[in-house]
Structures are given as C-alpha cells and as structure tokens.
Length: 174
Length: 447
Image (cartoon, rainbow over all chains, first blue to last red; front, side, top):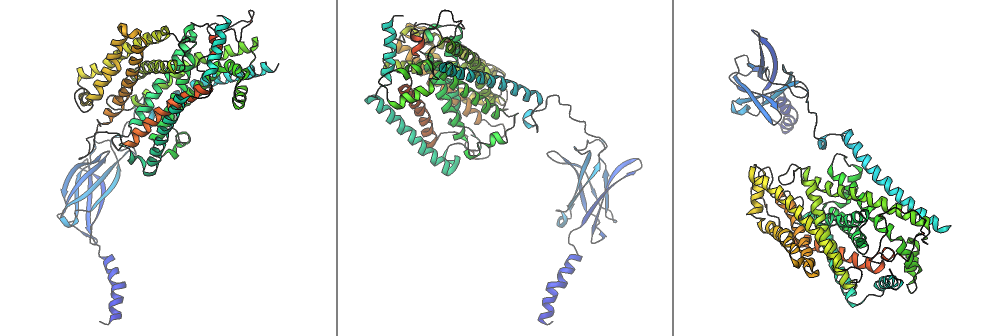
C-alpha cells in the first residue's frame, strides 16, 4: 500500500466503516397487552441484528432514584418483557418514565434506554391547603396584604409626624 | 420648679456641650482606634472573603449575627422606657428618656451593618430589594428594621425640637453649632400652635413605635423560627426574643445612665430612685425571661425528641456547656439574686447587675445561634469541623461594633443635650393655660 492510500484509508474509509459498524447495541421500548395483561417489551439489537441472552433490568424513575420493576433475558429475536407497573402513579406529567439497562454481557452493561408511557394511575393533585410559602413562586395574597397594610399604617403615621414637624416650622414663621 | 433650678438645668446641659476634657479626648481616641482596627479587619475580610472568618458551610452564621441580635435587643429599651412611660404619664422618665431613645438609634445603626458584614458579597445588598421575595423573613427583617430605624430617628428628634431652640438661642456656642441647632429647631418659639403640633407628633410616635419595636424583635426571631432547625423552630421564639430584648434593653439603659450620670455629674437630675425603678423593671423582665428559658429547655429534655436532644446535650454537658451555664449564672441567676437583695438598691449593685445582664444576654444570643448550627440534620461529612471558634477578624469587628456604639453615644452627648431640658424645666417653654394639651405627651416635671 502506497502512503497516499494509507492516509486516504485512515481519513475516509476507516471512519465510515466505524460509523457503519456501531459497537454498542440499541434498545427500543414498547408496551402492549398480552392475554389481558399490559407488558413492557424491550428489543436489543446490534447493527440491526438481535442480541440473544442479554439480561435486562427494568426501572421506573422516581423522585430520588430508579425503582426496579423487573429483570428478563432476551430471546433469540432480541426481545424481553416484564409486566407493566400498573399500580405505580405517574410523574407530574402523568407518565411513567421507564428505564431499561443491560446487566450482562458485561461489555454492554453501560447501555440503557428510556421512554415515557402513560401511567395507569394518575397522580392526585396536591391537596395542600397551606403550601410552604417560602418555596412558592409568589407570596400568598394574604401575606402580601398583611405586610402592605402594616407598612402603610406605619409609614402613614410617620408622614403625619413629619407634617406636624413642618407645621411647627410654619407656626414659627407666623 | 424654681427659676434658679430651671436655670441650672439649662446651664448644666450647656456645660456638657463645652470643650472636651482629657478623659473625653482619651475615650474618643481610644474608641476611634478600635473602630479603625475593625475597619482594617473588615477590609481584610473583603479581600479574602468569608474565609477570613470561622464561618463555613455548617456555620453560615457566626458572631456577626450574634451581635446583630444583641444590638437589635437593646434597641428595645428606647421604645419601652420612653414610649411606655410617656403613655403612662410617668414623669420620672423625663431625665432618662433621651438616653433611652438614643440607645435605640445607635444600636440599630450598629445592628444593620452587622448583617452587611455577615454577607460574603456586600455588593449584592441591593439584590435583597431588587429580587426580594416577600415570603422570605429576610425581606421582612429589612422592612421592619428600616421602619424601626426611621421611626426611632423621628422619635429621638421630635421631642428634642424645643431643646434645639434653647441651644439656638443660647449664647457662647460656636457658629457651626448655632447653624446646626437653628436648622433643626424648626423655628420653634413655643407658641400654643407649635406646642399642640409637637404634642400630637410625640403622641403618635409614642403609640406607633411600640408595635414597630415589637415587630422588629419578632421578625428577627422569625429569621430563626421559620427555619426547620432544632432550637430555632419554636412557637415561643417570638415572645422569647421580645422579653429578652426588654431585659437586655433595660440593662443597657441602666449601664448608659450610670456612666453618663457619673461622667457628666447628672446626679441632681437622675437620682438613685430612678435607677431603682429601672432595676425593678429589669428584675421583672429577668424573671419573665427565666420563665421562657425554662419553657424552652424543659419540654425538650422531657420528650427527648430526635433532633433536639443532641442539641440540648451539647448545651447542658457538651461543647457549649460553659457558654450555656455562664449565660444562666451571669445573665439570669446572679442579677436576679442581686436585685432581690438590699444590694440591688444601691447604685453599685444595680450597675453590676446591669453589666452582668449585658454580658449574659450576649452569651444567650451566642447560645441561640451557634449550637444549633453545630447540629445539622444531615450527617456531617467526614472530617467536618463542627466547632465554631471566631477568628481575630470576627473579634476585631465585634469590638469595633461595641466601640462604635459607645463612640456615637459620646459624640452625641457633646452635640446634643443628653437630658431633655424643656421637659425637666417646664418654665422654659410654658404652655398657655387655655391651650388644650394631649395628656401624657411631652409634659411633666422633675421627679
């Protein structure tokens, strides 16, 4: 191979081949109903070919971390499935954010995928009659009114006193 | 009151405004040096940031906030002694009311900057206003502090107008003083109309300043109480702070009166009986405050609630036991015991008791601020330093704050009469008999 051919291979052909042949599998997530039971399906494929015998862990995102809902091994068509967590309430957007991660083989263990699906249980709106004011975007109206009324009372009294001081000055002119 | 005596009041007060003596100069220079050193320390803190202090991610507050709460506390005295005694027509307040009102103003002038000094980025002070959130106790504190300072300045100034006119008309004063007194005297000539306007202004201020004073102490308490921290989140922290402020405030007024009485030879105007009355007031507040302290700790000790118990242990037997018991002994037990014995009826006994209360109440504020911060809810990281020991910068600025407080007092007493001349000597600006006068306001006789 001439040097120019080697350079051309390194610069153009090798990267293109590398792009075409990805080293990490892709995971796609779907839901469907089988025998009256709602299921989550994950399909693992590497360069379009199914990955068999990969162990997948299924999670649902919660406020302080991921809650594991199941584990399954892929079949020869790259699919695995666990039951959809119909008893878990969704996030504030009404969805369950599912995460699937490859547990084994070890070389794919960093691969994960996530998708959002409508939850079967919708979160009830917070029925907090007295939400913490400090964290609210705006001060409660009652609080604002109280502060303004008190401050207005104080400063109007001060203005009255200043007006009396000015009256003393005017009285001295007469 | 005889003319001779009234003449003496004016003469004696004018004498206090005369050229400073050696002791006065020595005090002013000494205190000025302490303030200057504190300024150097603050510049150092500005240069390297709050790393110059012992504050860290656990101790977000330190002695600056202790000083803030302490000075806010003693500011209560002016409002109480002047306004309450004025509204209750207690004539014996006349010689001491201005001292009390001045304490309020000067202590607020020290308390406010302590907050700014505590800020790592003082250049962002205006952000509190620009981006202030009305639901934050920090903004409540800013609003109530500025309202209280403005009211206290008015309340100091308004009853002083007739005295400023006396000084304006007095002979032998320098030109700049004449100009100053003339400008501030508001052309006072003692007409019936001027008396009526003055009485109205003073009466309104005496009524308004009380709730404002209570509000600043309550809001300062809420800075702690609205935070979910052991030792702070308490339903009684508001009244606890108000009573503590009254207790330390009366002690501060007694201390100031004793000092000025001695250095300016005011014995003729402030007899021992005045100090005894104030001492009785201090005793009552001391007993009520002891009741609050017992309430604060007995419930915690009995229930042993998870977060509160370690804090209590730190104070009773642990790292902060010395400060806690010093506060109990120096700030409460000793002064109360002294005041119920015959010793508490002598000037020396009352003075020592008042000084002990001042020291004890500063320690109490330290006990409020620091041990709670040393008791975080979340586990401290490994190797974290949970012992707060103020640095030289913090001690220097603290000393500077106290020195500036005394310096303002001394300079004030050289420019303005420390005793209300026209209230002690009512013959100076006599009222016409037919003029209706609001009772209790700016009227009385030498006790």
